[in-house]
Length: 373
Image 1 (cartoon, one colour):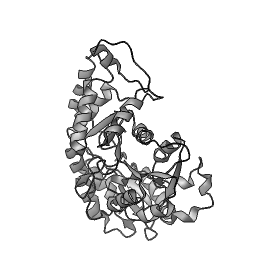
Image 2: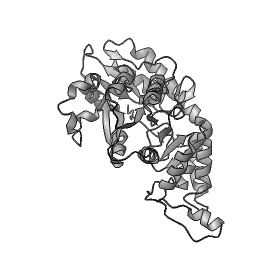
Image 3: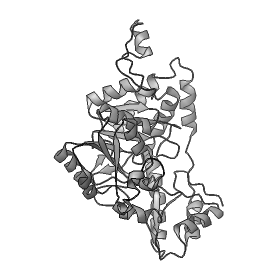
Image 4: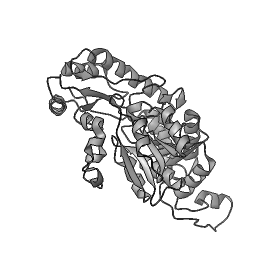
């Protein structure tokens, strides 16, 4: 049996939504984007949403809009995808890597405080796998040291902390619509915020720093526009916006289907010696963007051996993530500081993300379970 790591769920309604916008004049910065942004704000319960061409661009725009620049430092977890720290370098600032919790793989608040200096301007938290970080402790640090909190919500569309949606806790939330994410636009992202200045600056920067978009210039019969500052081409076009709008309408259904699969995994895998199932902490939910197990020493195979065995049986898995402080590119300052990351150094040999997606069949779930047993 073949069980891919992930398969996007594209419905007939999704396809109709995309085809519909192909008949309109504006294929970028049009009505579909505005509807998508409005519905997204309603779901997250934020005042504003700003569509972007990727979550990486959403993170970059958020940092730029907050004035992060040269000689600044931004704290990020080491157990994340490189985009989380790359965007800090885009701004000319320095990413400061922090270890993560052994149970949730989320950033450790107590380790954050140890690394705060007078150069620290922001913290990017990553809600790993669909479960919120400990936002009470992190927001206290924000208040104590005057730091701006950006939430990397790539895994967390529908995740909550104390019944508040992730993306509506810090200064800005940044979401991903990559094909493996909760909803997809192929490539795409979104910024959520309650800060009017941040949303206005993000909209300006996402379109080359131009003060009037083409649609506005046509509507008001104005040819003159000004470039206020250097910006980027980070727009989310109408085609992708229409797909996202269609998918967002069933996001609760998507998450319920993921949770149902996760419960099946939990019931069956918790009895296997050497397999540790995901743990959910109090005051938050888990939507299981990732179902990441830990392969302990007491299991008969190592994580790498299990990865290969499952692949041979037609089951796709993934290692998410390999710590940034062990990557080759631009992290040489951590070469002699590996002991700072005790948990991540251990987790890098244990974490294995199993297949989980809405259209996954029960027989596929059972096949994965039987192979692990």
